[in-house]
Image (cartoon, rainbow, N blue to C red; front, side, top):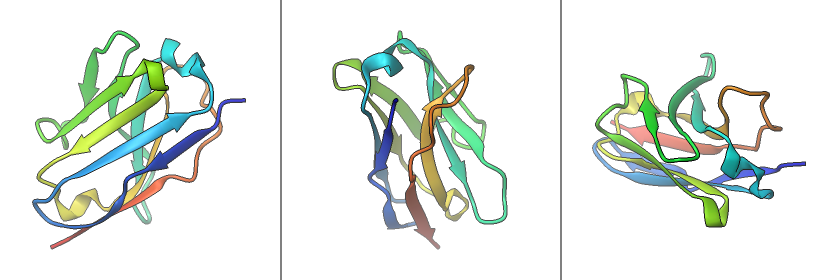
Length: 115
């Protein structure tokens, strides 16, 4: 069973940066499109970025140009570099697959952006 562990969140001022990491217990994720999702209080979970096994990326309009998703298949890890953060980025961030059944959700990592 794949286990996903997110880390790297924290409290940052608007305009700052954070780098999130998502480590998987199994290398099977290397075959899949992986994505970063976020859920803000009172809102539905939304996908902000995705990356194919070959490295092709896609971003939500709200983060395009500021967030960068990447992956290291040798480490079964997916990253999200977040720059020029805005207060509306405050949410719990999760990684999971895209376009197939989800793996069990991890605990997520809290990102809080102060104004």
